[in-house]
Length: 456
Image (cartoon, rainbow, N blue to C red; front, side):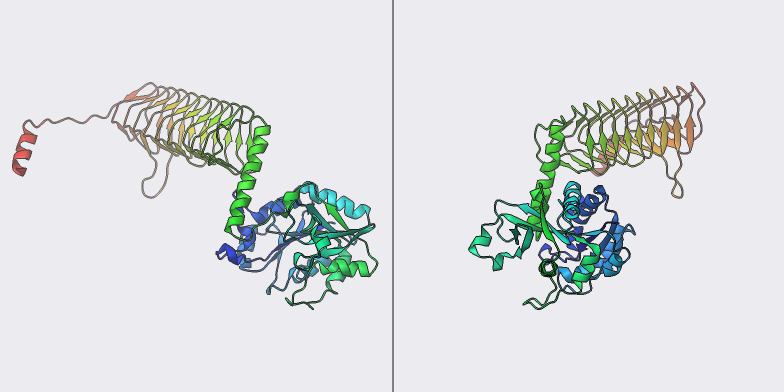
């Protein structure tokens, strides 16, 4: 079985935050998650994460998904991989991929193709490389007729070496059994007193083993982050990479200012995304929609021909031909059915809004089931919490709820029930009835004259 070891022990001091560097987010996901998902897409699913600084945060994030090992002291990349030797010994028959947890743009295609190259050439070790126009700062790959002779770091590079544009990405394939042996032979006889994984290449060659380099077609595998500026650059690059993908798929962007679309989002052809809109998580948006400006949509399923204007929708379903106007908040577990209309300044939580139902402005709907072709008047509130428990309201098809109606849950309104403006409903209402709650209005003539005189 093929394995992967992901090095995620970096502290990232220049990030100036008390968390492991691989947990810093690129486009809403930790860099570590980008690397894991690349492994998974290449069907390398036996993964071990090497943690270090604040390793408990790595464990908390992974939540048991993959094995972790601790590098208690930061003594180099070779030392980090050494901590995973028991993981390697579980099955020495296949190959092991070593990746950096803070290089998010490694991709599944590169992993699969480099493995094929590694196996076809019977390599003990294969370095995954990329070609850069400006390779300054990176280790250069020195090739031979039969493979490579080694990696020369920038500080040790001669003039000839510095002309080489092929650089080390920090990702490697090893025969698992050979990796275990090679790790036992590297030393820390260097200025830094660290164990370098790159030393395994020279040792393998000296023992007559094959060492090769696979040049990725994706130069972005090199990109990483050492400080907040680098992290911003990664986010900017990833943001535009995703937007360009959607442009190719027929999505319209009049202006991309402030637009953030996470990489798991799916959008149908003909949809328009307006400025300052954020679309997160596993959201799926249908065809010919208009989303934004300044909207947030997270983990939602959105149908075709939907309009969402300057509103926020979370963990909910919005069916076809729905219009959601300005400053609406759709909270989790809501279901807005076909043709519904939600006006300005509305909050909906854990509720079903039926087909072709209209919800007017300044309304709160919580824990409710509302039928088809209902009209909810402005200022209506479902009073769903009594201080101890939350209860549901049910409103039947074709009801007309007058302005400023209070529905005290649990309460059920039958079909085509009308409520008069200002009514407070405290009991079930049968089909086709009118609920009217009007106290006796008292008029005190001359009241304000007396009141104003008393203050003069």
